Image 1 (cartoon, helix red, strand yellow):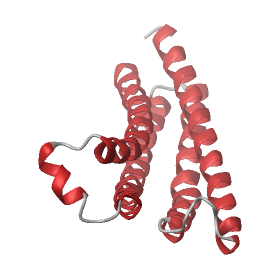
Image 2 (cartoon, one colour):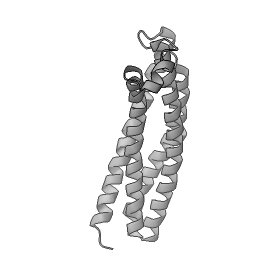
Image 3 (cartoon, helix red, strand yellow):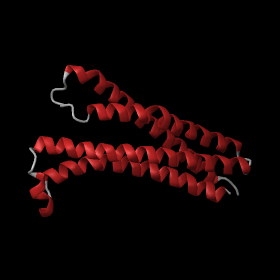
Length: 173
């Protein structure tokens, strides 16, 4: 059981790292496409002004990220329940408590943060950023506050996951 728990914790940590990479690279890819398009993409990319095309492609990246974060949120719940149950069955109560805290964090992200970030993000996708219109300034501030809270909670979740993996790897069977 311990080996399966280690495998699931490793999958959870790996998924969290991959989500961070995917989310950032989706946006970086937009700028790469616009500045260094492939020959096949060059002609269609000039059909709209650069700023309009960038905004549209960033919206697409945002929508993909939104989907990925919801799917990953549900995957985390499944992984977390699996880890916690395995640890409870193995009578590893302290480790099961660590997994439970990770599961609570993942649930809070999925239920509270992700929907609000999604709603605000969609409302802001086509709002100019330089300068930000006064009517959108409060929404943009809230978006970044929630984004920071999500990122911080994700770092805490990963730190707990590393502690849990370390405890499991160093413990006797």
